[in-house]
Length: 173
Image (cartoon, rainbow, N blue to C red; front, side):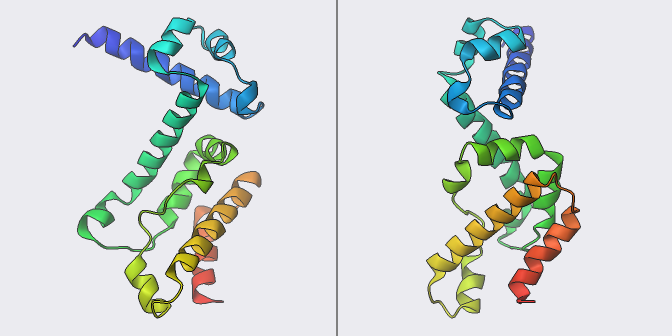
């Protein structure tokens, strides 16, 4: 492996992603061109196409990274088969990575995301095994809307406050 080239490639990818995320905050996806990105990043179009097929592949790459980062938050729990329902980690991650999450929602990926760590066994016990798919959808939609609202408000409330909101919903208080 050629280390200088790998480093240069990584730096190019980081530049492309940063410019893309910045542009997405002010433009819709279909209004962003490869030329826009390359001009702002100071890179050639060939560099872009060496790493991505098109703008949509770049968007998918961003989504994959965010979902992977999010899964890393709960890796240990998944490994031992334990669900702490600790959404504080998630809210802290969102606060630290607001632009990524804004982009994720702006691109509509939240409607495609499948809940992988939903504790189905816990839900079946809590809801006596009835209508679990509905409860999962309710949970997913509810948490997505709360996160979107929090992001739109500039994450003014603390991650701890947001976690308390989620917990209070599940306690029914």
